[in-house]
Image 1 (spheres, rainbow, N blue to C red):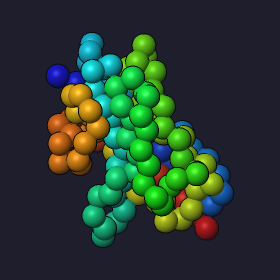
Image 2: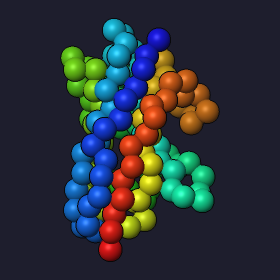
Image 3: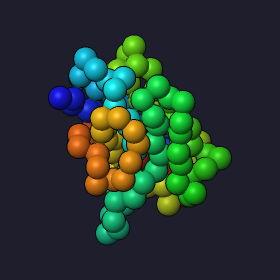
Image 4: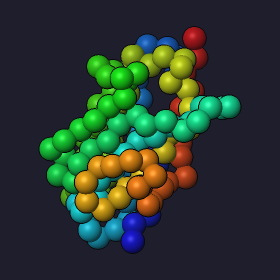
Length: 122
């Protein structure tokens, strides 16, 4: 029902910023909660942030609170992840995922993008 494409990744020095975008193809994008997840080499995928259907509720992993921000523009079918004060440990492939209705567990997200690489150098 929806296809997701991440963009905006790249190489940045520690302390720098990047903004990731998650573009969706569905006509009913506003009905989906969206989460951001990341996976570093040799590690399990972990939750980063999530946003509710109308943007009224947001959630962050403790590791990124105060540094990252999530927002959405339903008119553009896009969710953004603004990443500031980046650290080498933020290096990972970042994925966006969507599920109908409310934000939920990682396993409940039905639609996933292909990911975008974020590399933070020291």
